[in-house]
Every structure is written in structure tokens, then in C-alpha cells.
Image (cartoon, rainbow, N blue to C red; front, top):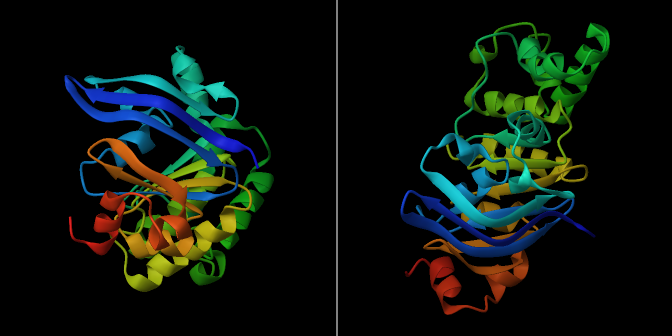
Length: 252
């Protein structure tokens, strides 16, 4: 199994403040990798660095390398090429962010901007991704109704279906279940387990039980460093580092 994302000696700064130090991890293809650790430890900064979303913050700078597929992403300088990079890396945020339009229009927007297939073909693709997200049957013909009328959990699954429309090899999730009830959370987790067959998933989560349930690999971050990176079962059952043990036990 090859690596979908290779991170080597990556450092990140906001102005003079260093928030990541010498991060080195390789994330295998078709796996779920979880980033865990206390708030402010650099998890989300690294996640947002993988699709260069931090470029939008004027004080941000970094060194080291991140390779996605075969592309060293910080070697890209042209803004149009950075835009194309982001098309190949799906992103789902903490709060669902459907657009104020119909469910179908939400799904068609990304593909209409980049592809010229027939409307019928694009709507068929949208329905396929709604089925993958477990939404097609739930909505019972409401896919041409306003997306903002959906429940929070349905909105988040719609956002995942929308991200799938461009078939990105890598998908990033920033605490996608933190605002959801347990039933919606389990539906999202089942969805992530299903789509990893075709995509590599990286998820930031404060829910260690969630990491245990769905992640193949887990990285424990503390004060900007990766303290431990291992397969999930090993990290939780027999961590090498005392700091990891203390965090898992909740006694830091």
C-alpha cells in the first residue's frame, strides 16, 4: 500500500509563533487517519496545510514538504494550480455549510464549474452520491427542496456528498461530528468507513472513541509535535510514549 500523503519535516508558523515542529508522517492510501490531541496542539493547522487553505491567512508560513499523490504541494506557485490542487482534496468542516439553494443545486455546483457533461449525467452522479451518503431514500423526493431545511446531520452528509462530486483522492474532515447527535455521528462514521474504499480520509477529532472506532492510523499531537503515530489499535492499547498514555487516560 502506497502513501497518499507524505509529510516530511513540516513546520508551520503564524507570524513569529511556531505551531508545528518537524512533523513527519506518511498516510497510506485508502485508510482513515485520525489526528488527536488537546486544543491548540496543531491538528487543524496541519489538516488545513494539506490543501493549502492556510495560505489565506496572511501571517502563515511554513517549511518542509507535503506530497499529495506525486505532487509536492508547496512547490506550486500559480494560483490557478493551487485551485486545481484543492479540487482534488475534499474538505468538510466542523459546521455543516450547505448553500442556500436546493439539495440538487448544492451537489451540481462544483461539477458545473469544472465539467461540461450533460445535465442528466450530472444529476445521475448527484443521486449516486446521495445514495452513498444514505440520503437519497431519507429525502423522499425532496432533493429539489431547500438544503437548509435538512437536519444538521443530513446537512453534514450532504456536504460530504458534495465533496464526493469531484471524486477527490484525499478528503479532509475537521471535527465533522462535533455539532451532531450520536445517531447522526454514527451515520457519518459509517459513511467514512464506506468511502475509504475509494478515498484516503484524514480526520481531526477530539473524540478519542471515534478515533478508536473508525481510524486505521492515529497521530497524537501535543504542543505542535507529533508525539506518536501508529496504527490505531497499537496507539490506544500499548502506546510507546508516556505522554500518549497520560492523554488517553485523561490525566495530563
